[in-house]
Structures are given as structure tokens and as C-alpha cells.
Image (tube, rainbow, N blue to C red; front, side, top):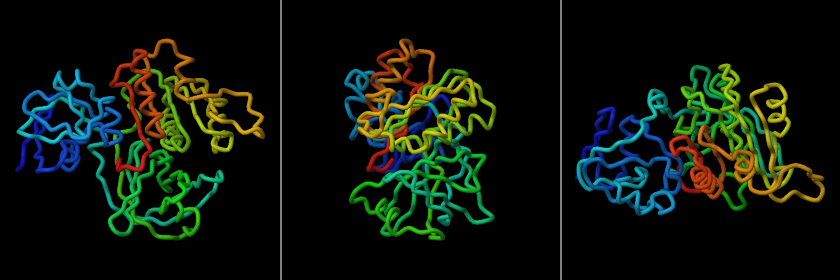
Length: 337
């Protein structure tokens, strides 16, 4: 059975086939609703069901507590219609205007910037460009229908090469391939751009950026884009890693802070090695950011990294007074985004 969904306040209408989620159907219809993890954990896709009923599916209580369900809220990455719906949700109109493409690309450069981090530069065909928003991601289309998603570390204006940062995951088929057998001039297929994690340029709020490990990648693209368009909103970057080697582009981040008065950079190590001789901040990266900001109500927060970090950041920042709609997350996990 097919159900009809009406988006409010835009009035946009699309259909949802049996078994599909509201988010899946909206994206298929060309309406880009906000989302992050796509597995019911982050709450980025939360909206209100004005009319009709849904099956909440895998929505987790941490992101959709009982009181929210009672108030008619739903996570549209999990919610499946049980009837025709009218829902209230923000639409990401800027991303909606960008076509998603499947393109071939060539591995132009492989640079090992840490023992477990590889920077890959991808070259598209001469007659192709991938239009994207800073912070969005692409998916590699692999044999047997498999996909692997990686955030774009390059800014939209520097689109001659697409840069991604890959952390080696022991036993991970794709990442092991990257570190052992991938070579320059290999041909890959990608699909993108994807995702609603990007800079909200219309806002004038100061920004807190929180990166965990290779979660630095999309924030790099975001900062470079902001600098390119002359954005001077205060931007405070916190980059967390286990040890000093994990800050694989430390000099670049330091350079931003040195050269631009509106940017600050705070590296945070959770387990500095004895040889690091570390005298900087230690602990959890999002807690370092909170320690520096007694009042976060007037900020936007962009967090990228492991799900546990993003979920903790969302919970703690919103508890401190950050409006929920001003928290944006890109979670790195093994589940499809």
C-alpha cells in the first residue's frame, strides 16, 4: 500500500511505498529533509506528525523519548506511515536543488598522513564536476551492491579534486583495500553529494565545531568554504584524538587560527602517549568545548565523529541550553547513513 505525505509548511507532497520510511521516500522524491545517522540515534530528522499515524520503528528513546512520542514527534529516518500523513519538518532547500549523480572517478593521489589515516584525492572526468555543499559526503559504489560513505574534506570551490580522509579499520574490507592494494589511477564509482550536514550560511550565530578523529574531514571543508566566501562569524574548532598522531592536520588547523582572528583552535587528546610530551587539553573533546562555554544558547554546533561522541555532544549541549535545531551532526558509523 502507498501512503501520501504532505510536508508543512511548504505543502510539498510525495508518496511512500510499503516498507519505506518517510525520510527514504522524501529523498527519493527530491525533498531533502534533515538527517544524520539514519538509524534512529541522533534526532536530526525529528519532526511532528500533524495528521495520521506512523510506526516509529528503530527510534531510540535517547533521541525520541516517550514524552516526545506522546506529543506527536517522530524520527522520520525510522518512521513508516500507517496512513496518509501531514508532517511538520524543516526542509533543506539548498541541498534539494543539487542533483545527486553517479560518476566514475580516478584515484589521483594517496597520502598516508598517519599510521591509520589515508588522504585520498579523487579526480572526476574532465567534463564532470560534483556540485556539493561543504560538509556533505559521497558513497563509493562497490561490487555486490556494497557502499561505503566518506565525508568530503574539500570545499566546494576546490572541486577539481575531491578529498576524503579514510581511517583504517582492522578487518574492514574497504579500508584494508585502501591501505594495502589501492593505487594511483585506480577507477572507482561514486554517488553524491549526500547528506544534510553543511554550513547554514544564512545564520549569523557564532559556531562551535567539534571533530573526533577523521571527523575533522567535513569540518575542514566547512572552514575552508567559510574562508573562501569571506564569512567572519566566530568559529571555534575543537579537534579530539587519542594521541598526537591522531591530529594528522594539526598544522593546518593552527594556521587557520593564526591567520584569522575569528577562528580559534583547541586540540584535545584523550590518551596522549608518553612520547607526545603533551601539555595541551586532555579528556573528551565535547566536554572541553562545554567547559569553555557556560552559555551556548546563542551558538550553532557542528559535530562530526563517532556516534557515541555525537550523541553525547547533542545531549550535553542541548541540556546546557543549545536550541535543538542549532545542533548539526555527521556520525561516522558502520551503519548506512
